Each structure stands twice: as C-alpha cells, then as structure tokens.
Amino acid sequence: MTHTTPKHVQPITLVIFGASGDLTRRKLIPALYVLYKQKLLPPALKIVGTARRPLSDEAFRQQMEEGIRAFSRIKPQPGEPELKAFLSLLYYIALPGGEGDYRQLREKLDSLYAAEASETLPDSRLYYLATPPEAFWPIISNLGKAGLITPVDDPQRWTRVIIEKPFGRDLQSARELNQKIHTVLDERQVFRIDHYLGKETVQNIMAFRFGNSIFEPLWNRRYVDHVQITVAEKVPVGRRAGYYDKAGALRDMVQNHLMQLLALTAMEPPASFQDKAVRDEKVKVLKALQIMTPEQVAKFTVRGQYTAGVIDGQPVPAYQDEPGVAKGSRTETYVALKLFVDNWRWSGVPFYLRTGKALKMRLSEINIVYTRPPLALFKHEWHHGHVEGDQILPNRLTLRIQPDEGIRLRFGLKVPGPEMILHPQEMEFCYSKVFNAEPPEAYERLILDAILGDSTLFIRQDEVEASWEFVDAIIAAWQEQLDLPIHPYAPGSWGPEAADRLMERDGRHWIPEDQHSGQNEPRKG
Ligand SMILES: NC(=O)c1ccc[n+]([C@@H]2O[C@H](COP(=O)([O-])OP(=O)(O)OC[C@H]3O[C@@H](n4cnc5c(N)ncnc54)[C@H](OP(=O)(O)O)[C@@H]3O)[C@@H](O)[C@H]2O)c1
Image (cartoon, rainbow, N blue to C red; front, side):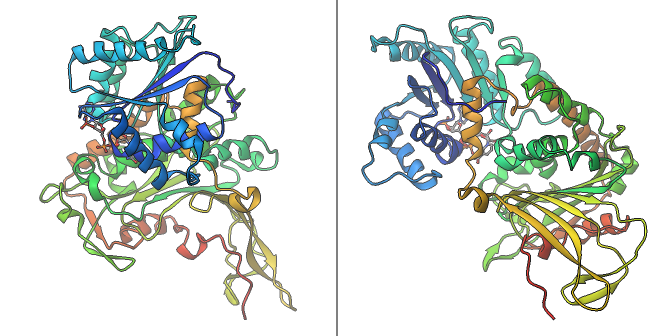
C-alpha cells in the first residue's frame, strides 16, 4: 500500500456514472478537486460525468463548482485559477438507456484526446459507478458490449471499475452480481468501495497494531476482555428512507462498515502491505465469524426503531412516519450484536457491535477493553472524587474514527493523598492537534489508490461474500421468528434499553457517553 505522487505519463479518463447525484456533488468531485489542487492527479486526466438526464458540459461544470464550494475540504479562494482549470477537465454525456448510448459514450471518450496532438498514448479508463445498485450490472454489461473494457493484461492501457455500496442485498445476490461482473471484468479490475477504509484513522488501526511492538502482544484472548465497535449516526433516515426501508441497519451498516472495522481490528499481521496479503488476512477473520443459530440470534441481537422526538431542538418524525417508509415497517434503524471470532487469537472473546440512526451523537469508535488485574489491591474512583470501591477499572484502548479522530489509552493513577486510591486517566493522541490539520477525506485517498491501481483498501469478492453469509443468518432468523421484538427508542438516545441489557447480562456495559468525549478533565473535589 503506497501513497505516492503519481508519475503517470499516460492519460487517464475517469467516467462517473450517476454524476447528477448526491455522492458525486458532495464527495467525489470535491475530492477530485482537492487531489488536483495538491497536484496528486495525473497531468493528463479528464473527468466525464454521465447520468440519464440531459445536461450540457457547462451546466455540469456549474453544478460541480457549487458542490466544490459547498463541500470541499479545502475551499477555493476567490478567483483562484486552479478551480477554473479543474472545471475545464469536466465533461458530461447523457446516457438515457440502452446499448446505442454506450457507442456514443465510446465516441465521446475517443474524441477527447484525439484533439490533443501531445497525447500519443491511449487513455486508461476508470469507471466510477455512483448509481443505485440496480444499475451496476447494466452499466458494466453495456461497457463490455461497447468494447469499453480492455483485457486485464493489456500492456497499453488499463480499465478499472469502482463500484459503490451496497454490493448485493444478501449472499445470493452478491454472488450473482460477482458472477455476472466476472464475465466482463477480471477481479483485479474491480474496486468495491467502502469509504470507511479510506478514513485515515481506519488505516491507522493497521499502523498502530503492526507498526508498534508494545500493543500487539496484548491483542488477544489472554489480555482482551471484549471489544466494542460503535458506529452511531445522529441524523435520522431522511431522504434515503425509500432505500433504507428495504435494507435496515444490519444490511446498510453492519455488513460493510462494521464488518470492515472488525476485520481490521481482529486480523493477523499480514506478511506485507501488498493488497493480496492484507485482504487475505481480513477475509480469514470474516470467515472465522461464528454464524449464529436462530437461538443465538434471539439472544445476541437487539433491534430498535426510533419513535418521534426531538434532536437539538429539531422535531424528528417517528421512523414509521418518514416519507418512503412502508406502513407498519419492521425495518431496524438500530442494531446491537454480540458475536465471536472462532480462531486461535479470539476464541471466547465477545465482540459487541452497535449502530443506529437518530442517536445521541455521531460517533465511530473501536474500544478494546482489557481484562482486569488478577487482584484488587487498591480502591478506585470511577467518577471524579467519588470512590466506588475496589472494583478495578479495566485498561481501555479507544480508536476514534470520527469525529475528533484519535487514539486514547486509559490507565489508573494514584490520587495524591494518604490513601491508595486509583483515578482513571487517559493518554490521548488527537489527529488534528498533532498534525495541525484535518485528515483527508476518505474519497480522496480511495480515488487516488484506484488511479494508482492499489486495491488494498477496496473489498475483494470473498470478503463481501463472507460478511453476507454472517449477516444472512441473522436476517433469516429474524424473518422466521416474527415474535422477536423491535424495540422503540427515542431520537437523541443511545438506542433501546434492551441493548444495555445485552451487555449487562455479561457484567459489562457500553462505554458511557461522558467517556466518549476524550477529555481529560482535571480532578475535582
Ligand atoms: N450519497 C452518499 O453520501 C453515499 C454514501 C455512500 C454510498 N453511496 C452510494 O452511492 C450511490 C449513489 O448515491 P447518491 O446518494 O448519489 O444517489 P442519488 O443522489 O439518488 O443519485 C443517483 C445517480 O444515479 C443516476 N441514476 C439513477 N438511476 C440510474 C440508472 N438506472 N442508470 C444510470 N444512472 C442512474 C441518477 O441520475 P439520473 O436519474 O439522471 O440517471 C443520479 O445521477 C448509491 O449506490 C449509494 O448507495 C452514497
């Protein structure tokens, strides 16, 4: 896995499907603009947007300029020449449907470089599928039929395809999509994106674990009591309700983002940072997940759905009343799970995962909670100035993915005074303070990696299928056991109380809210 300035002499065309959509305007084009500004893009690059609706090049440029101004991590300066130069790389072609369109697309792509006498090499092509998932296969199939996909071993030019999530809606549909895709593309040409993997702090999980020698020896069942992975969203379902109601939190978040975080947390050290080595280790974890029996699903999973309420003074309608949600919907907007990774390192260590919408705060965090020392020699204060007894607070390592990206390690310190009382304290690394900068957007990294041909941070076919296999067993059990409850929870809460009981039954608890702040407050009292 490298991150170098590209040294391409070869021209590259990036074709974005779904270019009139939200993702393109909010994320993809702003990311490309930042890469352009940082001179990380190949010098000969053109970006062609497509969607079904008609749009002129000018109108497309105008919309993308608005997107850059509103959402770019680095804002354009008034009248800056780079923005104008970047926008001049953008083109648009409407593809309302059918194979004939793709012949037009081919002509347009072929003509783009023909006008430039300086370009004697053929352009390589990166296709970005930022459309609804039902369009993925028709687009790839049409690209194939129009001769727009070169063989994987073509020495002159490459073809790569980035595919957005969701990749399938269960194991069977993911397999079918993979099989169809492989009739046109080699797996090495397929880049399934999970933007979580592009986040700096997610890559830092590997750097932290495998670039330091003091943590890895403790990273196993002998020292780790349990692991918690939280991906909480504060926003309710909003404009995606139509899609979300057919998916739910398990499909929308757990199958991809949480499974990837779990894989990076639990994987064995790879032999190298080559894409194959890293992905081989990740898939081993996903294949080692204990597939739940229906009885385990009843015991180890908690579903929730938000009711009407208020977040930050703004009314939030009940999920059931969101436009696009089916009447009486049983779709979960919250899920908590307890699962096990059946391998030598993790046998018997529970992993607790939770994710949901309309929760108290936006938070993505991994917590490694260590076992307690074997003997309680000291008293401990759990809260400032309040001695709770000799229950020892375990050491805890927190990997914060968003917001306030960073790492924290909790340990006990002696409180000054005559008594031997321990106070929990945290050592903290905060990304923005240490590097004096906000981390780059995930899409910047991932688009650049795809241009460079590095698939380490993309999901391989076997990873997708292994995580669907795990998720499918849960969905099947939910569908069979209709009496399993879907617990209501208030917007702005941490989800249903039943999720707390999932932990309490094991004598554990979710990391309390006041400990997510990462603040080392001075002791009072
Ligand atoms: N928005 C995000 O933050 C986000 C985050 C992660 C992943 N994603 C994924 O990214 C993809 C796009 O999301 P989005 O939020 O940008 O959706 P969106 O705003 O609804 O845009 C969808 C785009 O696809 C085009 N489109 C729709 N149906 C099509 C079809 N049958 N064939 C070709 N083009 C079609 C639309 O334009 P026309 O109607 O003109 O064709 C539009 O440009 C989805 O797979 C989504 O799951 C989005």
